[in-house]
Amino acid sequence: MICYETRVKDQNQKTPLSDVNMSDQTIATDTKTLLQDLVRCRSVTPDEAGVLDVLEAFLTPLGFNCTRVKFEGNGSYPVDNLFATRGTKGRHLLFGGHTDVVPAGNANDWTHDPFEAIEAEGQIWGRGAVDMKSGVAAFCAATAVFVGNQPDKNGIISLAITNDEEADAINGTQKLLEWAVKQGHKFDFSIVGEPSSAKILGDNIKVGRRGSISGIVCVRGKQGHSAYPEQANNPVPVLANLTQILSDTKLDDGTEHFQPSNLEVTSIDIGNKATNIIPAMGTLSFNIRFNETWDGPSISAWIEARIGEVEKKGFEIGWQRVTAIADCFVSPISEDVKIVSEAVKSVTGLVPELATFGGTSDARFIAKYCPVVECGLVGQTMHQVDERVEVFQLYDLEKIYLKIMDKFFSNA
Ligand SMILES: [Zn+2]
Image 1 (cartoon, helix red, strand yellow):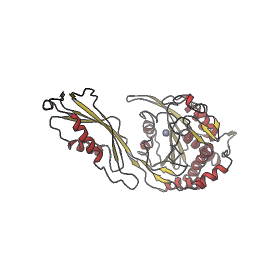
Image 2 (cartoon, rainbow, N blue to C red):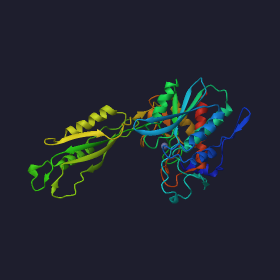
Image 3 (spheres, rainbow, N blue to C red):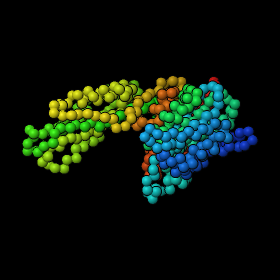
Image 4 (cartoon, rainbow, N blue to C red):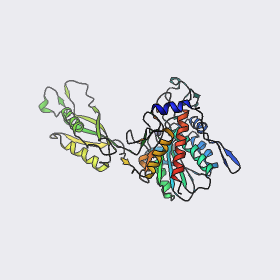
């Protein structure tokens, strides 16, 4: 680890891959400039704010067919998405990413304005600099170099870019992929450029993600005077008992790629301010992060079974989900995953861990169509004040993506 840090910091931090010639024009492929252009668009979910225009302007001269697809409905706001594709024959590599960002909060708390993309201390500062405009910029720039070096190489490169990953994710990647498949696209492998590294670029790539389900249990008893408990049914001990059962019952022991599934009770709400009233009802909220041992129906059945273990006489107990279930996925450790690992190693010197930690991401939607790996920066400053990326890491990420493409399409 230290070796890598020392090595890259000793280098000139500005080491872009060279620009390329496409027919009669030279196309600037500088990742850093592209990142700065993207950060300067205030694309807080779901505001497009020109950010997809920047990408279209970059990709179109490279021979990409760009289609803007807007989705709306299903109880969520309208979202702009971009599907860009180049090539018609050979293996199909899909890059998945998002250009929306979380709000910057109070701009005065930042060292540099969150939407000016200032370069200072060898870093680009701004909202989205890590999550994940860097991933998008590095992939686009790597593609430009790849296409410039081998313009007639067989192979299909597509990008599915949404502006709704940080919020509902209802009118984004999921629908964009459904749309693309309906257009006849078939993908062989996908890279998502989310921050996947833990401490240093390349120490981890993600080959899967745990699933997630959040729910709320309602226990209804009978209100009464605390001096006359025989005339009431107190739901509080039932909630306490259920909390213990849910928290103490083991879901599983973990699997080859995943830690054990886990349930956390996140809140118990009764809202009773009086000390002489037995409340009529209370609720318990929980979240479960689960591995591939479980799916939506089986994890729901597990919850039902735990609720079935508590004393119900005189009580009404029910539960419901509060968000959609995010399914767990894990990609097979194929030759393509090895290509990603080797690309990371050749640039950083690190053999990445094949990890599955962290929250959910849009990769879960892509996993329905092809194997998917998340390969990106260190997520340390994402969603924080002073989000920033070291310029050398940005260029290294671009080099990793370029090496992946070189190998992925080598026999195409
Ligand atoms: Zn992200």
